[in-house]
Length: 212
Length: 277
Image 1 (cartoon, rainbow over the protein chains, first blue to last red):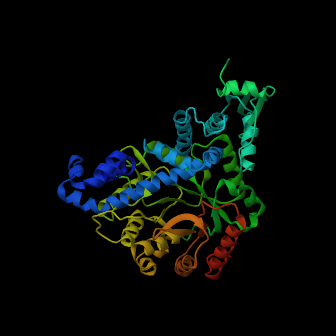
Image 2: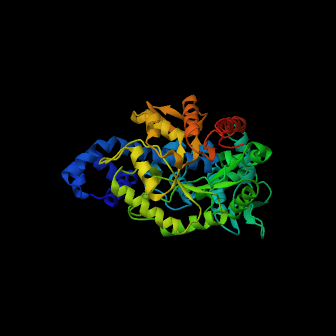
Image 3: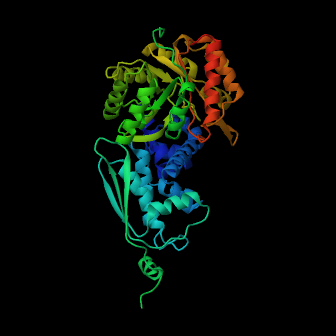
């Protein structure tokens, strides 16, 4: 097996969970299906533990970067953030020079899909997560991004960053606009909010109180 | 050989959280190393940041994902974008790792070791020729840390590194922390490793501290530089015509003062061995 084939095999073993598990359980048998002869499979067999460790360190490295890009989501989810990320990371490895930001955006989408009707989280968790995701999306765009939220989410994120406990907040329909001024690179934020909604209406919006 | 390159002195690997403190402590930082990948398709904000840094510091671009060791060749789009950035900055030199990060269309996401074989040397030299056709500034190659060695080695790691830089006529970015870490984890003596290298090709050093995890020394770029690495750095400074030394911290960046103290110490070390004024 030449260098190119070896590198292709290693890249797959590092990034494809199912293939790695099969190979580590039976290097010779799986190696044969991957084009390795017996001698080549025997030479790679001692690497099964290092390959597993290397793949784990890759996922951990991604976790650290994504946690830095979604700081308040990480704070909100606590230890569950890591467990959920490791579940998400089994699906694949991000590619390209924007891979870290794309990874964080995709993980946020995964969380929005995976945690429906989450009762252990505050009612505004989806807003907070979408807010951090939108920041990352806006950073990758040249002009503007706009999103609607059911709470004044920039203020909520600042409160959360300063606090150990979950802040109390009431529903307040809000539009957030990320934009750049012509010839100025800095991403700016404009926030437009309606007045605070009564608590009762917030409960209806979040689905936590039945309509009568 | 690389005598014409300027003596840049001691500096830091640039990371976003350091920006404001860097300008407050400008006189304590001789140069900055920027991670090229962070600026290759950068937002307008990052482009402005780069312009600001360019205006105030000598910059050395440091690539992560060119994958000079890929047998399938370089990614043309990546190489073109990297070349555009490096050529725009017009640095005294630029650096990449002796590793592969891509194969079969998969981006691995980490520096992966090459087998120490003649085929790998041919591959690296071929890829270096290709990138040199796009980038005028001299290339220097960095030694990586590795948790496992690939089977089939035809020479030692030091012989492999030496052969590549000699054949490709490159400079060396000697990461003394990587050298120390590999020596500990793979049971070799760093001094003997140095004896096998063409030290006249060492242009730049990296240094930082790692940490122990399950009996293995991890190159975490997160801790203060340990005494053993300072000692190794002094040995290299005494023997090699080092032009710049860069503290490569990625974590625990909130307290900037200890980082600048390490940069000061590295600068003083270079002065002691007459590497710069």
